[in-house]
Length: 236
Ligand code: SAH
Image (tube, rainbow, N blue to C red; front, side, top):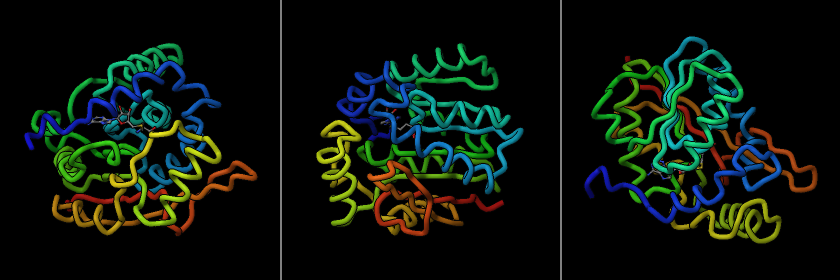
């Protein structure tokens, strides 16, 4: 598959359609708002964001990108959906966050343009929406400088994640619109770790994200069976 075609137009359309609600913390994007402080803290602890050049791949409306900019990183957010990018730009403008820019460019194209340009690359909740996620992992690795960090998050693939992330989140609790996620596109940590390794990255740590529907709270744990994050490093 040619790298520049590594995109599913229907996926982009889904996110574009909802874009105007991206910053509404009670919308379909509530889960992203809720997990954001948790993942931000973990990323900052490992990679210490202040003063770093950071790339956020599949940034959408910019929830994580803007939060990292507020931690004094120099952030570039990229996505291929135009409307979420428009919302992200407007929100940064209104919030007066200046060390942040957004570009509509494919990850693989940016990797060819700026190899090794970033201290930290983040790619959150995006791989499970892409036809060839291993190509995105490879591009993220190319974009990081030697010694730089690359963070991924996605959904694991097993009966529990089917039950929690699709049946629970989309049908029972209705946290997400039906059809947000497709089970076959979920990624096992072992698969993600293999793609990272093949891309020349060394896996450093992983964490799970859990949700309690009664308290409506998320927390990080060692349980990677549903939603998880993986931190990798490019050898120096
Ligand atoms: N990373 C953000 C948004 C996650 S939603 C966060 O965690 O807060 C998934 C995002 O991936 C959407 O904005 C969607 O437009 C984007 N996306 C899907 N396929 C993509 C592709 N091939 N290239 C770039 N972005 C893509």
